[in-house]
Length: 312
Image (cartoon, rainbow, N blue to C red; front, side):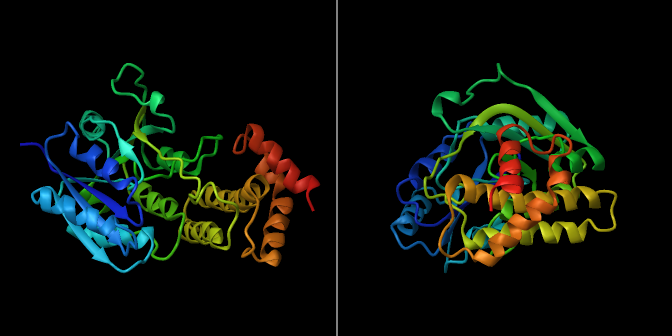
């Protein structure tokens, strides 16, 4: 018998993409998967679609309906319902290739890791349905895993939770920060700080939908300040560890991230001008630390220079 995998899918006003997402999980080659649809108070037809799938696949799909609380809350609500030995999260506007969970399960077994993860594509033509382009990197031990999390050498942001498989016993008691965005950063930190080994594959088996209204592609908004809140919490938790300096440096980078988002995408009217000025001031004060080494590379380094040295 295969070990069961539980997949949590938070749902909120995604009637146009939800079917494709759920169908991609139902089509998985891995034989034993349960789906937990956490409807976060959808105002469109999403809740009804969830019920339709649960009625059609009662042995595989469970639905939770609750009032709107945000993505973090929707995921947290579903956690107690997980019955699988392994679990994953999937966003309801994304979808996955048929062998993603079978592949991640095999990778976990092969490397004896706590978390296995694949890469993702933003264009369907870039997805990997086989393993011919496979490159696996294993991070083992506290220092290697922490350095991977803190992206000290210019690595791209890789905090997402939707392209991963977890051992349920390792994450069952962890929770996302209710009411906050950038929740993946915080949850991933909690996972990594207790993990012994991670396995990362270069294969792109997850399709990331480029929502033009998504959090990362909108202009800077007031709620984006949550990123600073997240890094303040992480910095506090790392205060007496050998990695305190890494956390502080990433907190400095968070201010840059907000300012860079405003520079590239603009900023909404709800952004407090005084707070925005304070973030820019932080970038200017921390320019030397942020520009040292390889933490910020390429065009992002040009943005850093512009914000710190040119913009007013």
